[in-house]
Structure formats: structure tokens, C-alpha cells
Image 1 (cartoon, one colour):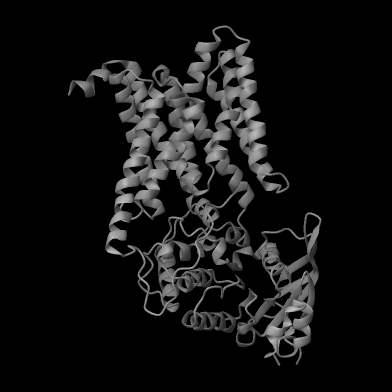
Image 2 (cartoon, one colour):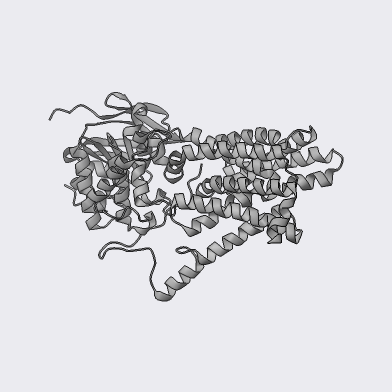
Length: 247
Length: 305
């Protein structure tokens, strides 16, 4: 298999929190239309890597490019789906308000969302099974529905890259199915998807590539070849008994 | 209706009435973001930190707005920079630095004659003493601050709700945070004459906190907050006139009363609504479909700077 052209390229990325090196020398290249799972134990730097790509954390060294150009120049096309725990669910916004946030960069400064933006938001909610629920306050949804609202927001952003931080936390079987379908739709449209997860039950079903992470990069490659018991053992250390079912 | 029209025969009451209405609208609007971002403590620090500026302008015989604006802007930028470097424990640093500023203002003023009387009018405001020029200046500041806030409403909302997405999507979050602090600072500065350094925070925080209880929509919250702030200002002014009480404090207590009423009667979040829900065993707002999981853990509070 020849490697397709890279969409998202991470080159020698290191991130430091004070004296601690949170990520050391990460290099990986994800083609368009692929789904990559960032896996590793808690504190391994999954969220840190996502946030470095998102531009929230400034890397100590290294470069991230999107289609060969610095990602900073193309931020409007980077969508982020936050961890549930990081969202202020008491904030006075409805589901439609949240989805419309994905349109803000296209709308531009000093302008309000228009009819077209509202139509796109409504369509995205509908595709994620939330038709007619746009007027509800975000606290009035179940956990899985809340995640779908944020997926809808990523959809209307017309992204090149979608970053999902622990999207499966507290999400039931039905919502996971909706999720998988949405992620597949993104990939089918050529979007590069990154999912940080410690939920290994989702890895084989969801991802094309895996990046095994524990402060440093243990392995990166197609899921079929890189998702091995050896790599998991190296990533998770002693907690590997859980993963005996992995081939 | 004499109690309504009698006070208006005095020009100082007419000016005071217009002033509290403008200040109410401005504080009600900007205060929404103070509440949603959890900036109450920073707002209090700002109100304290501008005090030396107020004192210096006062001693120089200039409008206190000038010195207050200079110190307010410097403080806003200082707080923005401070909260960017995660090394220091922000709260303590802000507390130490800006309370010391306040003390500097008091010390400077204490070297002047007529210390007590001046201190009292600067600390508690002197709404009945506002000049025509003060009212015009307040109006101009309110138009600029309100205009900027409304023009950047969707950006400020996004950053308040999801700063990570805002950064990922390429917004200049740090610059917008500084700008928001400058807007809060300007709001506090022009409001100082109404209620003074000590009580200004109440005018910025209480009306939006009351409004948040009444609605789950940001737009309606902003409207309700402005309405509550204006109504509290006007009602407080009348009450203080007729009851011969301190004006600033009366306005603040009127706003507090509005908050308490909201706390009891608010449709979704009020005590009465909660009581009814617990009696009937229903939770008003949650309409889960059968088979779906119950709500997960609640998120954190407001997004810090």
C-alpha cells in the first residue's frame, strides 16, 4: 500500500508544561478522508496533542501543517468537539445557537447568522437525529444528544480536520451508532478525523490509523498493522490484561 | 402622582435620572458577560484598582473619569497578561496587587484636606452631583462600549462558551479577552459616580444574575438584565429621594430585591418552580427518549480567562 498524500502532518512536535515534557517528538501524517485514533492511558498526552493541533497550546518545538501549509493559516477549517466535562452546560444557549457557532468564521466579523446559516444548522441537526430540537437549551439533552449537537456544529463548519476529545464518554449504544455514521460521513467527504479516546472497544470499528501515545509516540500506522498487543503493552504498561481480546 | 413628578422639578434629579438609566443599560448589558465569564472578582479588582486614578484626577481638579480610565485600562491589560501566564495563582496575585492600588489611593487622598468628606463621595458615589457634562460623557461611553460589545457579540459569546473551539477556529482569543476587560473597565469607570467604588460591582453582577434565572436564552437574558438594571436604578433613585437614604446603596438594594424576586418566581430555575417540580416528581426540562442514558455529569462553571 503506497501512502496517500498527507493532509495533516505533525513534524517533531513537543509540548512542555513547565518542567514537564507532556509530549516528546511526535511525528505523524494523516491522509484526507481517514480516521485516526489517539490512544493511551490517562495523562498520556492525548488531549494535549489535540489541543496543540487546535492551537490552544503552543508547542515547544515542531510544526503542524494542513495540506502542506501551516495550520495557523487555515484555522477556520479546523473543528473541535470538546470533552463533555469541559463544556459549561449552564450557559444560556440552545442547540441551534451551538450549531451556528460552527458558521461564525464563514459569516465573518460584524455580521449576524443569516437564513442560509440557519438552514445549514437545521439540516445538520436533522442529519444527527435532532430535527426540531434546535430550540432546546443544551442542558435539556441527554449526554449522547449533547455530543451530537457538537458534531452538528463541526459539520456546518465545512472542516478539513475534525478533532474529537473523548467523544464516547457516557455515550450509549444507540448514540455510538449515530456517532460512527457521522464520523464515516466526515471521512467520506475527505475530512481528516482525529479521535482521542481511552475506550479501546471503539478503536477497531472506528479508525483507519492509530497513534499510540504515552508522552512519546509508541507507534503510528494503519490500525490493521499498528493496533497490536505489543504496542498496547508498550503504551499502557502493566494494565494490559484487559486487552487480551485484541489480535 | 406628586411622588413621581415632584423630584423632577430639580435639575439635579433630572440629570441623576438620565444618568442612572444610561448606567443601568450599560451595566446590565456588559454585566451579562461578567456573569457568564465568572469575572465578578476581576470586576471588583478593577473597581478598586482605578481608585488612585480617581483620587489623582480629583486632586488635580479634573474629571475623575480621566484618571479612572487610565488606571482602569492599565489594570485591564495587567489582569489579561496575568491570567495568560499560568504560573501564578491568579486570584491571589490580583487580590494582592489591586487592593494595594486601592490603599495607595486612600493614602494619597489622606494627605489632602477635607479627607473624610471627599473619601465618602468617591467611595460611595454622588449621583445627585453629576453635571450635564458627566451625563454626556456617560452617554458617549455607553454608546461606544455597548456598540463594541454588540458588534462582537457572537465572538464574545463563542469565547465565553467554548474557548477551545474559538482558538481552534483561529479567533484572536487573547486580544478579545483584553478587549472585554477594557469594556468592563470602562463600564465600571463611568458608573463610579453613581454608586462609587465599593458598590459598583453589585450593579454589574446583580441584574444579569437575576436575568439568568428568568431565561435560558442569551438574547433574552441581556434584555432582561438591561431592563432590571434600569428599573433598579430609577426605582432606587426615587426611593432614596423620598426616604432620604443614600442613593447608591438604595439602588444596589433595589437590584438585590429584584434578584430575590427572580430567585423565587423564575419559571425554570426559581425556588417556587423547583418546589412544584419536587412535589409533582417531575423534572421540568428533561424530555429523554425511552432507552437513552440519563444526563451525564454537569460541566464546569464559567470559562476562566
